[in-house]
Image (cartoon, rainbow, N blue to C red; front, side):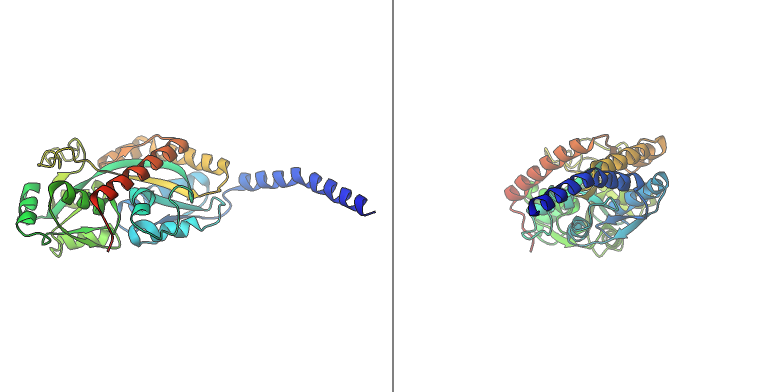
Length: 328
């Protein structure tokens, strides 16, 4: 009797398997059936926020839903990234991941609340861009050599703002100090928005930031660009020399922006997100907008993004160790 009962249970379970598979497929077919959260792990006004809002509006229309931008800044993108890592793997949480949150922070923070590779699945790499060194419009520092000379004459007196510890702005500053033999005062903020305002106001001497954020302020004349971190000069800033040209040979830093989902999101949903976002990024309007912001658009597949990210994690781990960079 007992054996028969077990047999009946097994048969019933087997019969349910196709139904469960159908239910999962049905759930994916019905996705999205509610608004999608797009977590930006930085305050409003920064590069990740600007790109999230540009893409989010068009993505919502393409998916027939609403993309809700949620700014959760702190610890160089770590706070918002940890929130996203713990979200359900149902396709209703997107994360604007960056070089800091998904390549640098793991080597800086001893107790990071997520694994940049294991906790997420990449969807797209939006693009990459160098950072530009800016000073207040009437700053006495007109070239990078002016900055380095002042920093060498009086170490730890030149202050430089950033969007937070571990961000590309912070790492670029640390690398500049390491390669040029100078020491600066790092002033971390909770995002690029408040940081650049203090540069404009003269509370901080300088700042590295992406052209996405710094570009409008350079064009308006509120700040002056004195060097870029790319290997070559930017088309959008042809008169601004590279850091390598300015006396630090071989210097190059490129920041990047991507979109991730929590690990475990079904592949069909990732594929749909990738396809829709790539359609948006490949429109002439968006290509022109990204290039005007100084970004080099990307066409990587999710697998290619994963390989690229892994290489970035390894590269920055080596750089941070060699430069002896430590967070206080």
